[in-house]
Length: 218
Image 1 (tube, rainbow, N blue to C red):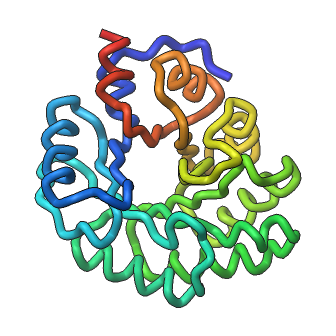
Image 2 (cartoon, helix red, strand yellow):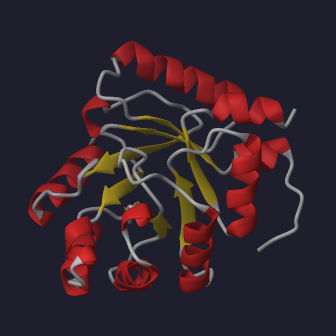
């Protein structure tokens, strides 16, 4: 846990401004990019089918195997490679959550490794932490590190079990010990919630309500 006070600009620099709604249009993505540039956030995160996009000054992230994770590893790898070819520099992949629930962590590791092999960019691994036991969260974090991931991430924001929690973020941060980044994502809608996630150890925030949250900090 950290008691450090962050400025609005520092928090903006931790945000992946996100648009993953199935009904999102090209015009919606253009609006997202304009909003992101105005807010001074770090990245925009979109569905891979929306690439390529023109987002000067912003990192471009795309999701893979989203939102269920129930895709063959070869399909996830191909999706990641295509996203990178279309301009993504960061990939947020969903693990096979069922494999993690069943304790098949070697399957989870190999799934992550397949996507890792498809991109040299930043790889974030989405656990869907609200579905997993603490032991499973720890094991998946270890599998992600072993497979060469750069971040572990709480949630897609689409699972009915819920999104990010302070407990999950703390556990992720404790397990990776600063060797990997920690992204809190899913259901973070207030500045207080965002600050709680940062205090718990989040180094990146996945937000769709970025403007409302940053405006609370002004």
